[in-house]
Image (cartoon, rainbow, N blue to C red; front, side, top):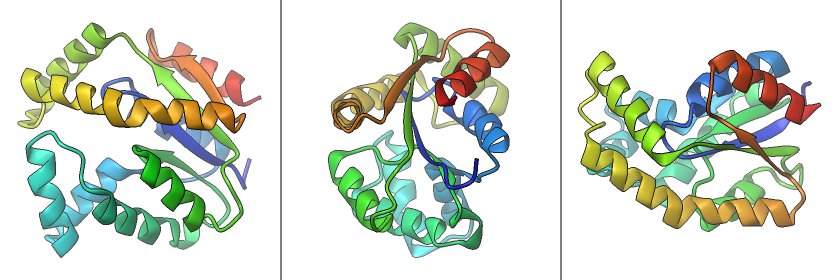
Length: 187
């Protein structure tokens, strides 16, 4: 399904990364994760990456100006011309407007929100932190990330619902079942 331009929303720990990779493969488009873009810029010690690191360490969102520049650069790469799946962007109303500008009238084809239980998400992220040695996933930082999501990102659900693009999919349960729900939502 080339020419699919999809945004995957959901709180941290809802399984977006796992499902984005599976769904992108199913659709034949690249999965573009802002987390991956941030980590690549941090690892390469770019100016934007060093700035982003300061916010990520505190569990805060990276400012729109920095994020928008990173995403615009990634969407301009050849593999994203015929479609993409965005995971982790947009996260604010201002980013929605910026993404609309980046797409220059092509617009999104789908927006899916993965829904998840907050306590389950906290446990998932704490388990991931232990397994992967992720210092950024302490319980206090996780809970702060969920608060920031609720404050800044959850309102995007209303924006995309008003545009008739939003589909909500239960992100809880076995990975394969969630993938089946997602592919059914796009059919």
